[in-house]
Length: 348
Ligand code: NAD
Image (cartoon, rainbow, N blue to C red; front, side, top):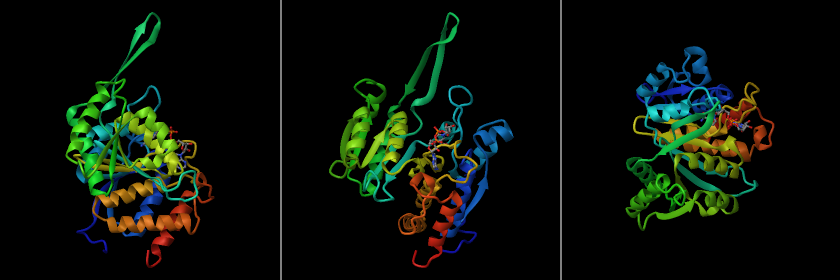
């Protein structure tokens, strides 16, 4: 389909921090070559937002996402320990992005694990990420005691469980493994498990319910990842396990994420702003490329998403063009150009 005024899709583009602008530039070029017709509204967040607006989540960025309800986002730097609250977490709250979808799929055969195909569905707005934390000073130590509370709600647990089971049912998946720590955090993650069990009843005979304590799940992902199909878990456990799953398929450079919500959908890489690589043009743009393919699926352009994934597969496995993190020598731009060459070939 040729881009026309009718099928151009307005979307917010956040280049982000560190390696963000480099990989976003490459991804936008590949999307264009694939025939995607997004009308980008470019906006800042993270450190780039602080530098220009003194705000890590400036109002014009929020206004743009409110309008477009769709965004592609580069990684945003968050100070560790003190400093401002994560803009990623604030974005999830602002737009009710309750479902974080993180697929891990083998793209390059011959790695440590073959044929991995697991999708993690992470609750994205509750749990220990609500940031209810404080210190209690004792004597001259202002940080003598640290207290943090998590919040899970029945409604929040229900909607993410429904999302995971529905995702499994409509994507030909057979099993949802609920990952929890209900033996210790009996209320906080017990509610999550209890609600997932309730929701699973509606899918009996279609999608199997499986349950795992998080520590056991972490080990089993290393020993036998093929037993997992869809993993449904809480915010913090999902954050940790999805990085582990990225490790199964070659690292963070391969791991895309979708944040789906009531008011918008934001697509990003699982990885961060990689300050150690920023400005060198060597970062792997693949994770954000795969996230942009998820964005194409989301807007109903599965045809273009398929084209793009096919071109990526041929670039990696037939042309053997790979970035440094995957053992290759290509720069960010060279990898993107190689994918574009494949897209421009007929039959792709
Ligand atoms: P990171 O993901 O930025 O980097 C971890 C390691 O992976 C580094 O060695 C890095 O070089 C490598 N790496 C990451 N992305 C890569 C890529 N595309 N290609 C090749 N190698 C890649 O994690 P970090 O160092 O813990 O965090 C840096 C900053 O990013 C922090 O401020 C953190 O808060 C932020 N962060 C943001 C997001 C997000 O915006 N969604 C996610 C995670 C971390």
